[in-house]
Amino acid sequence: MNDQCPTCRHYRALREQAKQAGDYSKATDYEVLRRRHPTHAVYVPRQAGGRRA
Ligand SMILES: [Zn+2]
Image (tube, rainbow, N blue to C red; front, side, top):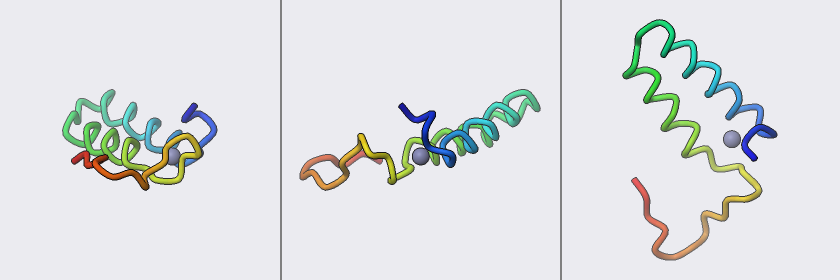
């Protein structure tokens, strides 16, 4: 669960703020940042062929 990652929670909060402010491009930026966040224990980035933009 990403809820244990404070950075992801931070990004998600910012995303919600941007959404409520009507700034959807900014909200998308934060969503991308959250998805790319590398320090999740569940996510193992060292895999061949796991190329996601
Ligand atoms: Zn995270």
